[in-house]
Image (cartoon, rainbow, N blue to C red; front, side):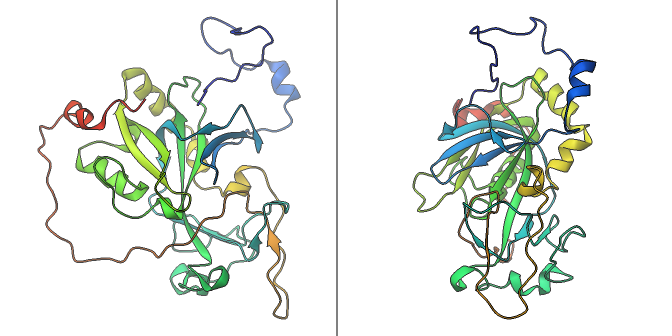
Length: 303
C-alpha cells in the first residue's frame, strides 16, 4: 500500500526535504472539523481501502498490507444492528454495541440488554435467517502503516471470522496471532504485521503473520503515537462513529414486521460461535534465550 498520497502536479514533489511541516495558523482557521478520521477498510473482493473522513484516498490495494499494531482493547467487542444489511442504504450508528464485550455502551441508542451475557441477540440462531448470532464479534485495533513516518494512525476492524481458530506455522487468525507472539516473547506493537486475505476460505477471512521486528525509529514512533489519547479512542469507536455518522437507528416497530435495511458502514460477514473453554493442556514453553532473529528465520521476509 502506498503510504504517501501526492497532491502535487509535479511528480515526486514534496513540501520540504526535512519532513512534513506543521499546519499553519491559516490552515487551522479554515479547518471545518477538529478531528480527522482514518481507517483501513476490508472488502469482500480481497482489497484494502484507505478512508479519510469516510472517503477513499488513493487506490485500493489487493491481497495484503504491512502494519504496526499500536493499540487494541483488552477484550473482543460486540456490535448489533437490528436491520438487515443493505449496502445502498445510508449509514447509521449501530443499535447497540459493547467495547468490552460485557455491557452495552451508555451511548448506544437501542440497548438490547443490561448485560451481554443474558442478551437474546447473543444467542446462536438469533442472526439473519436463524444463523449465527445477531450481535457480532469484532476487534477494533489501531495501526500504523509500515514505512509511513507521518505518525498517522488508522482504525482497523478485524471481523468475526478472522478472530478465532488455530494458525498454521506463523500464520494465524488474530487472537491466535497475539498468543503466538507472546509465546515467542514478542509484543504486537514491537513487530511489523502482515495482514492478508485467506485465499482458501469460502468467505472473507484475514490472516496475520509477523514480518520482522521494529527498528529504533519505528519503535520510537510507536511510543510517540501511543501517548496520544486519540489512538486509544480509535478502538472505542464503531466504524460508523469513526466515519462521522450521527444518524441513529430507527426505533423498533410496535408490531412484528420485517427488519428495516440499513447500511452498517462495514462489510457483512458470517457469524461464528464464540470458542468454548477447554481443559487447559500443559503450555508449550519457549526458551528464554530464543532471540527475535531465530524467530524471523522461520517467518521469511514477507515485505
